[in-house]
Amino acid sequence: MTAPLTGYTATLPADVVLDSGQLYVGATVFGAFNGGLKFDPGVEYRNIEFDGKRSPITALDRKTSFMPSVSGTVIQLSTTNVLQIEPGATVVGSGAWTGSTSYMPKDAAGFLAAGDYLTDVRCVWLRGGGNFVQVRFPSALCTKYDITSQDGAEIAIAITIEARLDMGVTGAQIGDAPYRIEYIASV
Amino acid sequence: MAAEKPRYVVPGSLNKAQATNSTVQIYATIRQALLDYVTPQKEMLREIVGNPPRIYVRSAPDGVLFPYLTLLLSRTSLAAYNGYRETAQLEVQAIGRPESQLPMVETAMDLVDQCLTAYTNPSSGLIVGRSRTRNTVPMFSDPADSTVVAVLATYELYLWPTVLTSRV
Image (cartoon, rainbow over all chains, first blue to last red; front, top):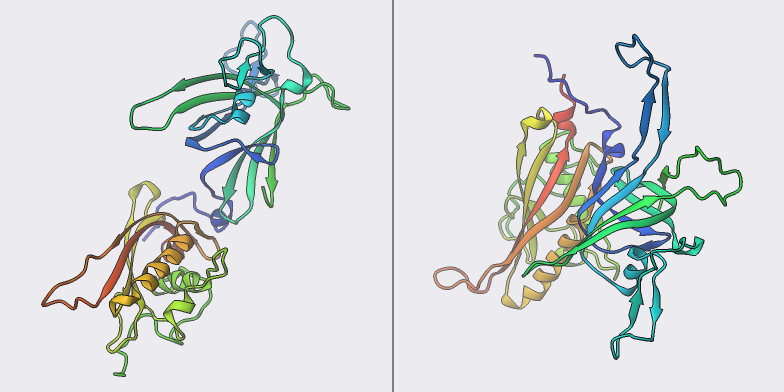
């Protein structure tokens, strides 16, 4: 008898990645998600073109850009979350609804300040062996969100957080990847 | 007390090493996980099911003391993984008598819930548990014994057991 082909190896029980994972900002849990997390490194390559070329050619690839992002659907909206999905928002008193805490989103004209960015956004997943693997954005920004509600269900806030390369870090080069993949013993 | 009938899991019948080399060892591994689990409040199942622990496979021996637990596995292998991975339903019954043992039986199942809904064991093959359904059995009436109390829970597990992954 010949056993079927399989990807199973003796290291799979330790290396397999389990469950939906969790999004952290620094050491703090972002919130409760429904449907897991999606990470896309957003890498683009260019295989140099020339007349007569018939197929992509080895050693002629250049990585031309990154647009790393993590997306998911969060089911809560705390005051902390507001500031995470609305970078640069400020609490205002003038013109606020009576008795409210009013967050005014950042204006559309100026640059964001360094402090408006999220630091160490981390998608953390549990490995079978009991430790963790994470994708980390040292600097990041929530660039897109929308809110959908449904009768009899929790709110669904679809968020997209993109990595940013912080050129203020000593030694940072313009072509550096703005994300890391890291193996950690604890979250 | 009447002599115990043979069972898969009786004291001294199994090596306590974590293993999934056989169905019997899968039962033993899960049983040991239940006995070793400690809650944040430092509670352990063995404080309820005694020593030797009254956790049996399929059914309890004759003359058993109460409360006790039974384990019963139903396993399915899927073609998508060429039969190497399986999903399993583990039915756990916690049985008490008299009726005053109901709080003890519910507490025992709370401990099982905590253990098996966050269970990941990669020490031999892989066993993972995350979800369950649970029911408290309504009070029996004649001719059944109305002093018996029971909680039944079914845990959804998935496994890469050595008994399936070590084929040649």
